[in-house]
Length: 390
Image 1: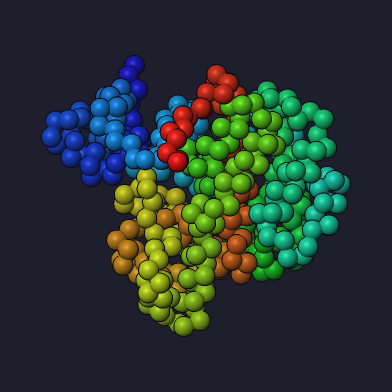
Image 2: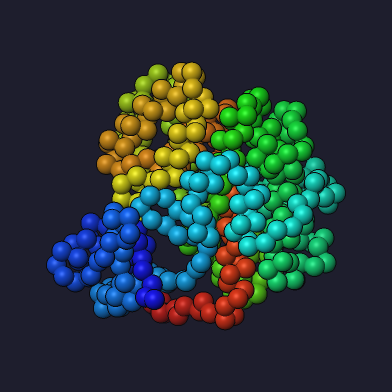
């Protein structure tokens, strides 16, 4: 059977907007068929690839690649992990650990406590160490103390993933007393905020981890696959992902939303907060996504949970005002960073807590891609350099 792509996937593969994709259809350049649901457009993958080769105009310095993957499927209504819709996983309140095992296509024992080497390394760090640096330190400590780190089998990589996620969460310093048992989301909460949590609050954090676990071939995920392609161990591949995640345009993007909400609260005005960003000539954070033209379905799912969990809190009105005004003035719908920024602000965390949530969540997806890449031909990513110097 010929591979079929959704409109989101086809546009992403061509590197065009969905409006352009449908313009190709109207001009007869591309064919289209409808899925059984009568709403979803499907495109022939071979036809898309042929058009891509024909019309490709690579800019100087641009690198493009297509990687076949069976992990995450993107479409107009949301994304799916291994054929299971993420919205359904969130709706069923599935533990993040279960979702990680789903992505890794296996099951195993999750450690119940942080290892002594990780605890010692964390104790030696300055109190002001950023959360992302603490996560990197935990992974490095685990790698140094794991004699089986070079086991590149799916079972070995998944085992390293369970150890890493436990150490990343439990290795963070506490901000308030909390449980050291239960799911990872429950243990992460008292490490990012001093605010007491209701069951609904903890469910929101778990949903954020599930929603962010994977989203196709983002920059950090590609970095992990490159590392895995040269047969780096799981910890090294994970470190590659953490390094790419540190960019302001990736894992740290929700911090801009958090700061914008703080400013709106201080001035009791969404207009002032958004206006200051526009005056600086910056993009309004939390709006627009290169894959989703209309709405980011992840923001819809998580945003709804957040509003329910903090119902009655007057700050939710500020979130709604900023989100609405940002979308109006940017011409782009709110994205997942808007939801994560709202979550961290309402939970009274540090501004950078969204980056920690993102890193913990995406570790599951990164290692799923590492496992998949280890089944491919080694060292297959070798782009050519075109010398342009003196």
